[in-house]
Length: 427
Ligand code: 7TS
Image (cartoon, rainbow, N blue to C red; front, side, top):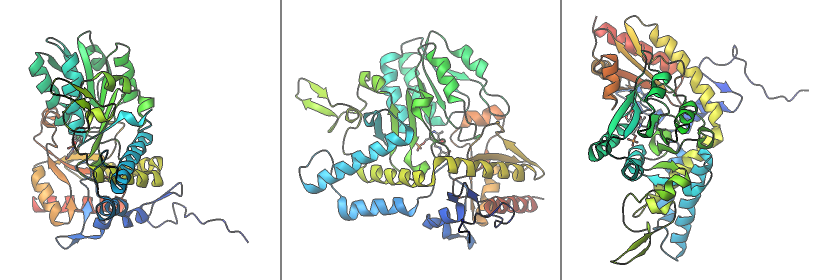
């Protein structure tokens, strides 16, 4: 008698049940996220606003409760049991992040509030010490505002120039144009790994190579990449990589700046205060070693621990399984939504992740979002904090469905039906 496990074939599997390599089953994954079983306006919630923030699995919610119920203490201070335990858990979370992105050392992982703070940190420390009048900072035409404004503030202060690498009509970076913009005055390149408005995945490895050939460091805004694919900062060879916990199933209020230790060592501190010092007198302060030099004040201990829990959850599913599942889901959504008459996709790059932005002829995206909300479907409408992207495509806004590992083809079908209802209302 054979005892081989029965893996359903594509034909025999339930239509919306997905098994990738036997390790990833979306129906099982969904049960890990309590909020997904709630209703909105009397309809089953279809949560497609993951690029704004993702939902949290039970493991993350429990990690936060456990910390405040059983483990709460300040870190790096006390000799008492709870403080030492909290410190141990906090630093263990740092190592979990380190291994997740394949950083060389835990001291290269700086805990910050999120992607926004990570970018501001680099602009205000590395930027302020290296950028002078007439120098250039190079970004792209597909940035989130948080990878524009910190550099603008820096450039204004220093009399430097912000340069912008153009994109094509599909929302892909024009690599030749990008390379032409790398010059002797370029002091840093900053670009997104994945665009939040278009879903474009940028060829970061190639871009880093181009910049490094000219000794220009590269910061990667990884906010929209980390939830969807395996990120390896060693392989990418980027100098900085920034991301937010809340978009990768961890809590709001914590994020990560990865920096190569050689870069971080020579950068001045960002904020001053407790924990980031080695010794203080009124005459002179010496700073703590990495990563603490960049972590002034009491850190978000519960946040770090729960981010660690989110990463362990993702590791349990396997980032490659998640990427394969989402790739298929996005392909299905792209086909299904673009086939609806009068719908136009904004962002049709060959390599995309997580995001489907669209406009419907004659209907304002805000109306699309409002009517879909009545159906229990949560999407984001507007400029997605990427106004220059909207200007590039000559539109005021888009409707954006953004996916995560727990979304299903059935939800894409519900979205498609919702869009048809919107069109009926405006017919
Ligand atoms: N960079 C990118 C590419 C983003 O998508 C976002 C947030 C940020 C930076 C800022 O992250 P934060 O956690 O510091 O706020 N993007 C979005 C979005 O697309 N919809 O809401 C927030």
